[in-house]
Amino acid sequence: MAHSAENRSAGGSVQWEELLPAAFKRRLAACPIVYVPLGLCEPHGQIAAFGLDTIKAVWLCEEAARRTGGIVAPTVGYQIHETGYHARWLEDVVGEVNPHMTAMPPEVMLRFFLYQLRAFANAGFKGIVAVTGHGGGNQFDYRLVAERFARRTGLQVFVASDPELTGGQYEGDHAGRYEISQLLYIRPELVDMEAAPLASVPGAGGRLALGDDYADATPALGKRIMETCAEGLCAAAAKMLDAIKSESVNTAAASAASAGAAEAPPIGYAIMEEIWAELLSSSADWRTTQPDAGQQAVGNRSRWKALERRT
Ligand SMILES: [Zn+2]
Image 1: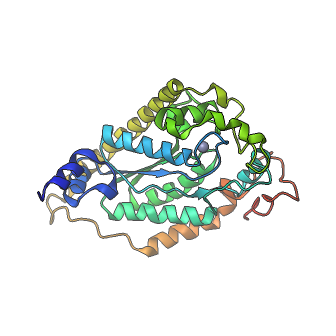
Image 2 (image 1 turned 60 degrees about the vertical axis):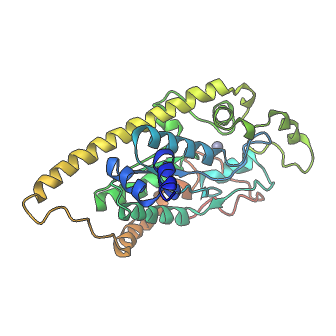
Image 3 (image 1 turned 90 degrees about the horizontal axis):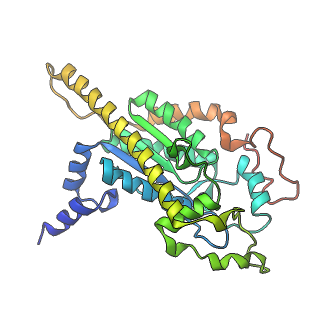
């Protein structure tokens, strides 16, 4: 039957890559918001999967799209790491072993993010919600990109790390009670507490950034955390949708007397390059290009020394 795939897609999926055009257009018309999950692979101890940050960002975006409307963009499984404040952190919690990460330089990721925003605008979205499962500072740089893009294009862009969505109820951590609980709730099969002793087995990689209080993690806490994050995300998306709707009412009224509401022409590369040039000229202010204020310098012999400063 020709319409069975369409029905499955329309009824089940909120993922852009799984939608057929008719279902995409319906979802877009009902709620022109796109969610983009930003994660990466990095160690979360011997006990948890590398993609924890990615997996929780996807989960939150899908929940928000199901509850509030909108479409989830393809996941970004690479992110800024190694540079700036990350360098000393890696020296401290990973040491001189291979952490098996999908790390990218800030100037690559932020430029890519800028062009992602362009792609979303050109695909017809009016609002963009980016959720990063990797926090600690990166989100500030993504917001610099988002703010400049929003100013130039009039789109709404919201960027948050998952702990920021909890309104101060949870602080977030790295592979500790907070994060391991999150994974225990959403993907319990990706946590193996019995693997913890590998940390002391030669050649296994050591502690690999495991948090001190990981053993206090529970699925019940994970559920509370993820629900709180999801509620915060849905509230942000609902607020954005209201703003988009009231804006489109005004735009429609203004253009009613003229030729009608034609689709805006696609954004080209030139305006993106202007925004990028402005961003790059202030790269000394990015959080990911230098150590945090007061952060101890990386040891001269550390493998993490070379990328500590990018400016
Ligand atoms: Zn994490």
